[in-house]
Length: 100
Length: 131
Image (cartoon, rainbow over all chains, first blue to last red; front, side, top):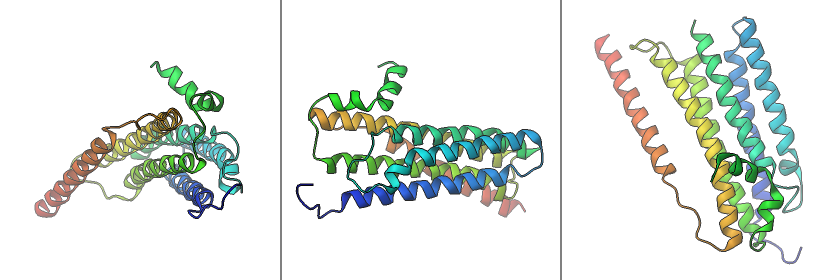
């Protein structure tokens, strides 16, 4: 650490990761709620959604809790983004199943 | 650039770190926060789709509610994928000292969301006036 950063960039970045994790959790809860229709296919989709959520949280854990300015490699970014896209894709059949 | 090559680049930090020079870490962190803000935008669209599917009353047009929900879900997924692609291209440009990539995507997204809102206003009015 050479100079003190007056912009508190690492802290802001860590808080941004936490907000994102919170948003991911809200989406997961909404998807699981939609799946509470009692049929097996929806339950399987909901299980996949929860797995994706857990994987995304594991991927961003170091960035959301670390203390250094640049923790581990930036692999967390594509992982969380693809998990989000996966949540969206899994939600499509959930919406269609809830319609009937 | 082939799609698989772009995806490989997202996941390969050493490749990303081999080009150009390492910038002031604050630039990288700002780029990362911009990515996270886009990701939350995508998550908000997905949450909107899931909420529409379970909390909206049936709309006057058959299956309009589900169509809105699916459109929001696909839009949200697209925003998430484009966010990570834009992050990787921006990081590269910063390291190489090039111009930051420009994109039409924010304008297109804003127009789509605005158009969708107008359509919903029309649907609500039709329902309200038509009884």
